Amino acid sequence: MPESRSLGSPSFASLAWRQYRLERKMFWRNPSSAFFNFALPLLFLALFGAIFSSNQKNLDVIVPGIAGMSVLSTTFSALAYNMTFMREQGILKRMRGTPMPSGAYLLGIAGNAITNTALQIVLITCAGKVFFGVDWPKDVGELLVFVVLGVLCFASLGVALSHVIPNYESASAYVNAIFLPVIIISGVFYDANHAPRFLNGIAQALPLVHLIDGLSGAMVKGTGLSDHLSGLGVIVAWTVMGMFLAVRGFSWEQRRS
Image 1 (spheres, helix red, strand yellow):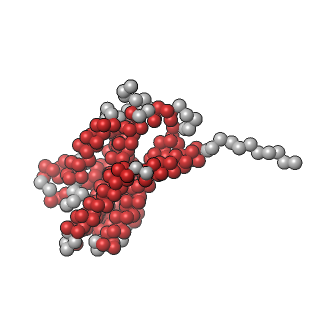
Image 2 (cartoon, rainbow, N blue to C red; image 1 turned 180 degrees about the vertical axis):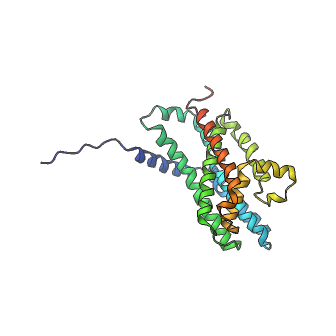
């Protein structure tokens, strides 16, 4: 008779997939999280799309602007909130003591944020085509490059920010103190090139305006990556800094008893 095969422990990929599925279920079971990290950008798109419905030039600015804001909200804001909550509630510490590999656990969390970003980009692209007269993306490759870089950049910065947030009660103040000024300065709702010079100078030093420019080039203008090399450089620089700070400051321990 053939020897019976013993079942081995789950693989790293299997554990990461299970954690990812759990994160997806918890996300949709949390109405406030689903609204602020997923529905809010779509509401902004509907609102400003209705306001500028008679002006195609403004719509061509709003659609990629909201797409850029969606990347920011589903990665930077979501991870800053979630990592702070899990750290201060002792979830990270408890998970550290389980047999699950730390990488599989964190990969499941990251996968949830990436999924939300991908869904947002697809929905905004389709809404832009169906409701706002913005054609299908002219350069899908450029779109993918900027979305992937945007996710890496803002996800790492969100994790890095969570390290300096002392408790979950203050997370909203910390996140909004960065999120709101950045989306206003970076031209989510208008062409940043028309902003006052000093505001435009600040925006050019931040990654979001370059992400929006890249998305606009891919979705509206069809300019190609070669026209956005300096913007790509800014996003990559912020990504490297964000990853360094995210790894260096990471802690599984609570900061208060």
